[in-house]
Image 1 (cartoon, rainbow, N blue to C red):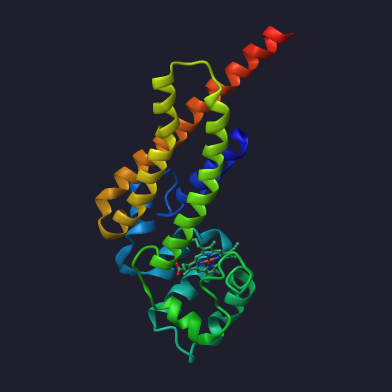
Image 2 (cartoon, rainbow, N blue to C red):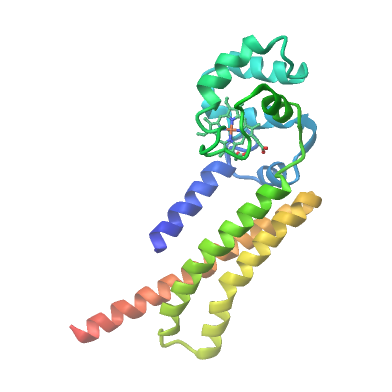
Length: 218
Ligand code: HEC
């Protein structure tokens, strides 16, 4: 369980760190994800960020971006059609990883390609919040149950039990605030870091307790 959580955090880090196209995780990555970039087309920021790896070269990227800037109309569709079909449709279709933004027909592609980057959409934010509350909530509840049996000071135990939940809520609540105001990227970051730290403290104390009691038994 602990290992699974580490991998999910690592995955998150590797994804976010690409948002602004520069290596390394920064608050700017969070701002672009949640608040957006009001003077840039969504598809342009994505193709410079998380969607970049799906294209082979700058030529493909520029073709797509220019098509989008030109209004993503029918006239010049042929220049980009094969790129979209080959490189994007795998995920951007019903049942794919990005089914929420389907590229199956011209009208939806044009619609998405001409959007400016307003940050994450409310509906996707709702979906993400929902998934996170359920999945991480279950992980923390299970970890918390194990943690309850550790022999540390009861008051400290209560604090350490509530801490990861509190941090998770702070993190997720801040996603919504960051969508409105970029400064809250800071609390997204702090909430995220505290969530991980809180979970690790529980995890380590639980492991140490199990280790000690197995030594006593053996
Ligand atoms: C491996 C699967 C995959 C491929 C291939 C892929 N995408 Fe995506 N795309 C995603 C996922 C997942 C998201 C949501 C996460 C994000 O925004 O980074 C997304 C988000 C987007 C968005 C933002 C949509 C929105 O409403 O927020 C755009 C625009 C986009 N992709 C364009 C493209 C283009 C253009 C290509 C082809 C060059 C492409 N993608 C290829 C998985 C993929």
